[in-house]
Length: 203
Image 1 (cartoon, rainbow, N blue to C red):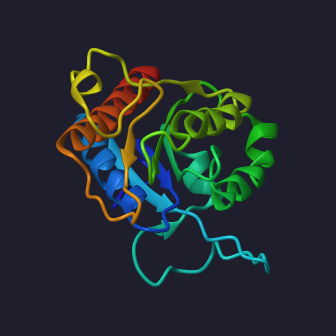
Image 2: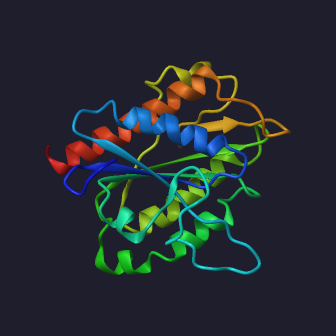
């Protein structure tokens, strides 16, 4: 587990069927390929018709809920959400809407950030969802990055993968596992964001 003195990239996701969680795990592996950088994997609570504040609770399984301090002290951020009508999921939007205090203090300014997503179909709105997640990151003054075409998987993938960020096609039953290209691109994105974070920290 990361401590406060070790630079970390926050891999923050919301997952309903497990695909985003699997992607987050691979992205974290990519982050930790960069010497001196760690990955901190966190999630956000679901939003229901009765919205309650659950960030202090411990989920029954999986990643811990993200706190404001997790976000405040990160060296970089990789944000993941499933596609919801071409947009990020309400749970992620609700969390981001609660970060105005970090915007006021400028705690995220000049930190690198990127995004990832999953949808049940190939043309289910992946790219617009990635772009929707980038908007609040730019309002926070973060340095938004994607995946360059120097990653060969972008040219060969028959499933997910875009220059805006890594994606996954989960299938109509949301049960498709990550393809080899998707795994490689997840790790490449984690490594790239961590490399940028390290460079910006000057270490």
